[in-house]
Amino acid sequence: MAHNEAVDVVLVGAGIMSATLAVLLKELDPAIKLEVVELMDSGAAESSNPWNNAGTGHAGLCELNYTPQAADGAVDIKKAVLINTQFEVSKQFWSYLTKKGTFGSCKSFISPVPHLSFVQGDSGVSFLKERFKVLSKHHAFNDMEYTEDKATMAEWMPLMMPGRDPGETLAATRVINGTDVNFGALTNQLLKHLTSAPDAQVKYCKRVTGLKRSNGGWTVSIKDVNSGNTREVDAKFVFLGAGGAALPLLQASGIEESKGFGGFPISGQWLRCDNPEVVKHHQSKVYSQAAVGSPPMSVPHLDTRVVEGKKSLLFGPYAGFTTKFLKHGSFMDLPMSVRAGNIGPMLAVAKNNMDLTKYLVSEVMQSMEQRLDSLRRFYPEAKAEDWRLEVAGQRVQIIKKDPKKGGILQFGTELVAAKDGSLAALLGASPGASVTVSIMLELIEKCFPNQAKGEWAGKLAEIFPAREKVLETDAALYRKINTQNNVALELVEASSETESYA
Image 1 (cartoon, one colour):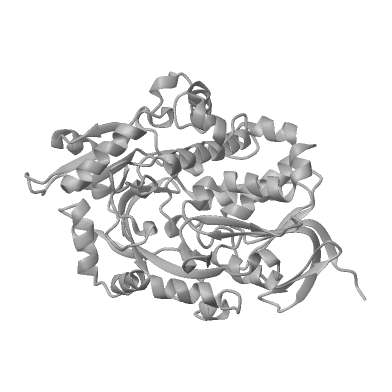
Image 2 (spheres, helix red, strand yellow; image 1 turned 135 degrees about the vertical axis):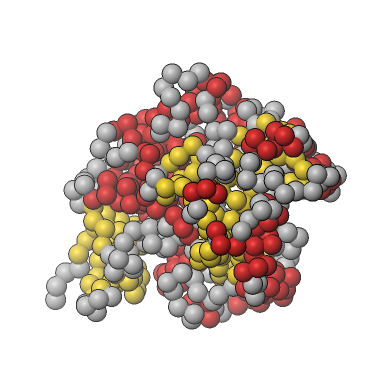
């Protein structure tokens, strides 16, 4: 009988998560042997594709759902600060690779685009003013500007102000040094960089059909979707980074830590404008507040996107519901994910989230005219002929056990790892891509603890001179690292002063 192929690491899915982890592991241990397995015929075909996500370098600068307001009016900035420092960690990794000289141009995937928050009505203005007051005291948000002046807003958002009721109550904040990130281009650049090294392969049109324990690691069954041929690979470590498909693969592993997890798929759509005459008047990402009862991922925003050097505008997202876990998946994905261990949490979530279900159904049923009405809240003079519908990627939100409610629906991401560190999966969605590097560093510390503290420690310190916790508290170091990153990624000129980067 033929022996199975053997590698150190198998990574399932050729998106931003697997690409980042694979390159990071190869930097830490150039001798490591790894294989990335992808179902589609190219990398970044699902959630990492630039038209399947907002492309925001999530840094907590404009996303209002990262700064919740309590009943007493207090605004909690902890999550915004964490996401901001995590994005700086991502930028450190990209800067390190760019400085190597063999990675390619950073301009293909990251562009400077201001980040704005925009609110309407007295309660919105009151919230934004309090948010600005608290956030701008933190060194990561020192350069945030606030205005209620409509002439200033017309300079910041020239597309959004004409045609408004002059008596409308409005406010906005702006941070000049925001970014737009093409995670598809970044993913494919990472994969190209990875495969230029020895013992690193990316194999497309391959489906993982089985995972079983063997010799302290895993035997991974892989089927070629074109020929139907199957092969088995023995791996010491397996990473399931296949977006929505990570949940069924995690369930197939049978690890104790997978018990009780379920998935709630939410689809999305955007309105897209490629008309250069419209696009040139909106050079920013503008986020507002989500409608009451809508999920956090449906926070409306009007975004400049830069894809392959061309600028477009995206507005949305318009949420929806489908039982697929991937955009190119099967309608059987959700029913096939039901298990004895997760049916309780899934039923509890269904019962406790009827408002969300109704909201998703209502979003699906919207006409184009109704979608344009939502856009006109941002851009009153929007013309139907300038906009078309673009189907976004699938987001599978996490359902997990809860001692009080039976089950809860969790927005965000969660790393699930086997006790012995031989397998890990990433579940969930936003702000995933922007904070990928922090998540993968957490995975390395959890699944490769001895190496992380031992032979890899020096290299980790070289790539990441400052991690999240110290960036949160050390203002001078934050400014230094932020400026170094922005210069390396060509977001500012090398001669820029620390305080005046743009």
